[in-house]
Length: 339
Image (cartoon, rainbow, N blue to C red; front, side):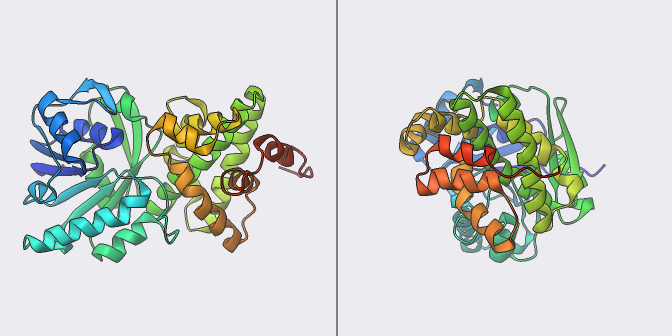
C-alpha cells in the first residue's frame, strides 16, 4: 500500500467540508481547512467548533482553519473541495490563480470534490469544469449516502471515490478509509456525479409529497420512479447503469428522500406545506443543491429528449410557480404504461 502524503487542504468550511476535514485528520499529519469568511474561521480556530454547522463536534487539534487561501498551499498540493455547485468554478479559478502567484505548478495538483450538482452557468459536469480550469490533472469525486453530522460523529458511512483511472480511484480512496468508513472505488466519475446531482431533485419531490400529506405509499412511488429518471438521464449522459444503482445513485437517493437531515427533502416539505421558496430557504439557511440543479436538469433532459415527469413537475413548481397539489395530480393522471 502506497504511503499517504503528509498534508492536505479542504476548501469550504461548511458542514460537509468540516466533516471531511475531521475525517482526514485521522489519516494525515496536517490538515488545513479554508473558509471564505474570516470572522467565522477565526472563531472556529479559537473555539475548536464549527458553531454554525456542526456545533456538537470538537475539531481535531491539528486541524488548522484559515480564510487566507495562500496560507493553505503546501508542498503536496492536495485539495478537497466542498463548496456549493454555484461557486465551484470560481473556487477552482481562485485556487489556480493563487497557485500561479506563489510560483507553484497548477498541473501537479490533485483535486477531489464532494460537491453535488452541475455547473449552474453552463449545465456541464463539475469534472468538465475542473478539466477546463486545470487541464489534465489527477482528480476524483467522492459521493454516496452521507450526512455531514453523522460522518463527523464517526458513525458508519459508505462512500464511493471515482476517478477516470481505477488505479487513481483505488489510491485516493485510501485517504478517506478509517474504522467507521467504507470507501469503494470506481472509474465512472460521470455516473457518480450524475447520481449525486439528480437525486436532490427527487428528494425535493418526495418532500413536497410528504408536506402535502400524501403518505408513505406516494413517497415510495416517487423514489422508485425517481430512480427510473436518474437511470434514464444518467445513462443518456454517459453514466454506467451499475454506478447509478450503487451507493452514489440508489443509496444516496434513498437517504436524501427519507430522512429529515436532508436539506432538499426539508425544502420540499416546506413547499408542500404552502410556504414560499424564499421562506423555506431562510428557515434552512444552508445551501439546497436541488434548487440550483432543477433548471439545468430540466434543460438537459429537454435537449436530450429524456422523459422525466417528476423533474418536469418540480421545475413547474419551483421555476414557474405551479401549485404543488396540481403538479402532483398531473403526475397521478399520466396515462398508465408498462414498467
